[in-house]
Image 1 (cartoon, rainbow, N blue to C red):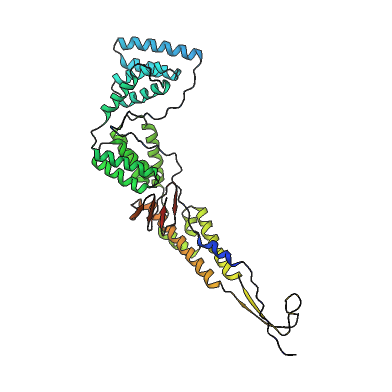
Image 2 (cartoon, helix red, strand yellow; image 1 turned 90 degrees about the vertical axis):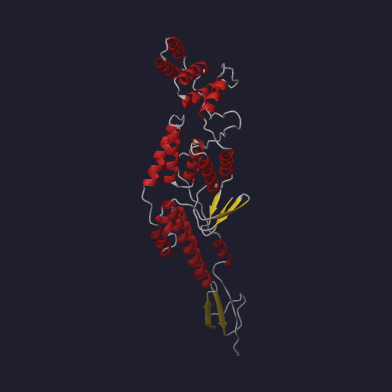
Length: 385
């Protein structure tokens, strides 16, 4: 019987598995601590906008009566010119009955007389929150007068830069926002709110040392700021993060090249490490497991298309995706190692990012790291929406 040759092919895994390997990217988480809110009040742009005030608890009958008695004693102290005692009495009265706009107004007036402008502003804001109709005498007028007296003379160019910074933050373009706040503070060095907002944005970018420095400067410019306690707490959090020794970028790069994803594990980002490891492992598996087997048969194939036992001359096994799979795994490993290096270098140095191009709401840049909301970092090319 003449020999017949039959080419019979079979494969292990579907080739489309390699398509999964084309996507690689993960974001960088910002500091987990509670973020400070931005200050959006622009001098000359309209009435002062008070921060939100939580609804107070309603006091009991005894507490309300005791608060009224303390307020009466405080009124006598005011007549006698003992403002310090009147302030202490009204402090206690407003603690007992935090829902009374009248008590809050009396306390704000005493604070105003004592020269505690920022505390008086905060208390007048509480008055207006407790009485939205602004029916408590002249609270709004006194609030605006205090705010106007507290404001420094700010050039229009600084105000414009400040507004651009707020727009940049709202659009997620934090680097652009920092540059705008830089411009605002350069034109108005004593403008506390601009310094504060720059510190808040720097904290979101992970630049803890620079952020803490700006927030400390804010407290120097406004030592009696109503949010001084919250800002001080945030400074402590940022300093704690800054004092933690950052892992070595070089070590992350070396480990990431030797073992896929090890750079991310080394920098404390297990999810990123698992992502790199699984993608690189998937590429290797696809390259090695997808096989093309050519069977040389001495006779005609059976009814099911297979070569009868004992009639197989030889089997030629090839792996058509081996080079592509191993090359893809090497590329994923290298990209992961570079990402880990750039991530740690950005955290350690806290320096500026490389230049980026803004195209409408999209920012495209080279190697860089900048954690923010709505950002996708590919590390070799950053695209921020």
